[in-house]
Length: 521
Image 1 (cartoon, rainbow, N blue to C red):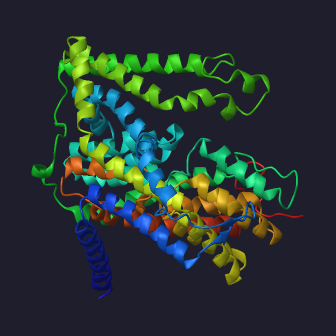
Image 2: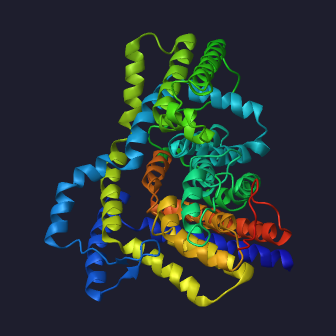
Image 3: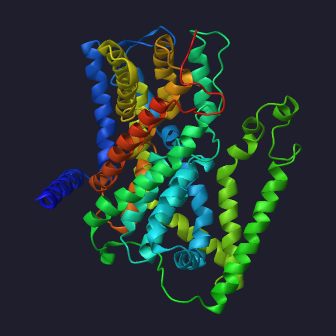
């Protein structure tokens, strides 16, 4: 009887996810949908202006009012900045630049051959965990994981006969849902700690939140999220998707099975040597204090290491493009799939050519996100949400968990982690410091809520990119497909990470080197 009840509950959950997918996919084509969302943002801006909605910014004390995008000035702005919105859309340049190199690695045969070697080297039982773990760790390269690892996750699963969209979902869950976790300090750490420091100094002048403030907590989260992501993939996502219908795929590489040929082995050896050369070159450019990709002023001032290597971090996209290009050429020349520079140019063009629908989608997505930001609607929602939590009057662990839930909810309206924290930190850091909680603890709670819902909000700037990748494997994929696949990850990550946070606080474990849980005036 108990097993039957569990099966019924699971069946109910799967039916719920199926309903989410059906409803979502009955929406217009993603291109049309983002165009309608852009129009909706304009109309909402007019409505909230008419209603006189406003909020007081906690950081500046200024009153934030909505901007009516139907005013003459804003209509002119929409026309004159349409192209700028598109060209400044962050994922656009990253995707196109990286694909130039990935096209060569894919069409030279390196991707398929390397995946076959990977599959033979990694036990199938660990394949999903490997994909999720790689996704979590990809935040070392800022946003590049969205472009590199999500399609690679689909390829890995397809290479062993599993549904590629399940692999894409697992990788996306790691990349985006685990963006705040890593075994190393990433660019996000100093960004958040800087805002936390400013907020903390409202109560305690001179207080400093270090970039390593949440390091121990984030390291532990890597393994938790890897386990949770693996569980969700096997228990919910893959069973729902069933058998992949290859007839619905468009322009996907063939990843065969079987032993590698002599030519493929030569290609892999050449790519391996090229990879070592790339690593050695980057080490020469970054490791020495006078390296070309070090900031000489930061080095001379003895600033933290992450500030000294800012030129390297800012160059990660072209470095990835060049690395993929070199690896693909090395493999292709050795394996015989590249015979001249014309082959390289053709392969790069083939890689970029598949982005046609994504580029159109990116245009309308860029307008929607720009309009929503211009309107101040998201900012007003965030401020009012923060004030609502303050008004509830919770204390202790329930207050911190409530803060996590508010952060996760606001994340559906403001995608940028730093933009949200710039709004929320001046409210919650001082408030919770006065209740005895350290800024480091408040920041850790924020990171839990911020990461968990990244994967289900269309306002996340890489959401259109993931839809385009999904449609490559199944042209019927839409927003409903992606959200229904990612919703279990989001819920399980939020619950599991929230429980880990609760246990961490209850046991009084340190969040990072010298980072206390409590604040004592």
